[in-house]
Length: 80
Image (cartoon, rainbow, N blue to C red):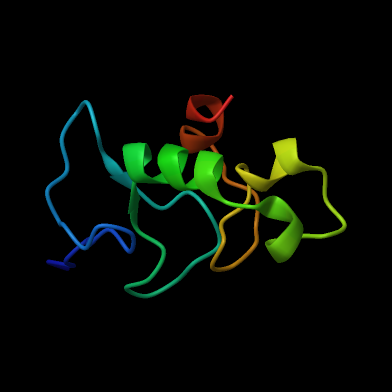
């Protein structure tokens, strides 16, 4: 599989060691790929109350906003 990994935030497909494209959640198929930097920025900027009213804000950045599953390693450690 020559699967194209495209970040769903910035739509770029370039992955580098400093800013890799990852999908350590429950997303399948072509969805869910995101640059680590895009994930960190979107997690900080989002108003968590709108998306997950029952969860504490600090937990929201650890959940994929597409499938709502928690991120697994190595992404999980990168968000701490």
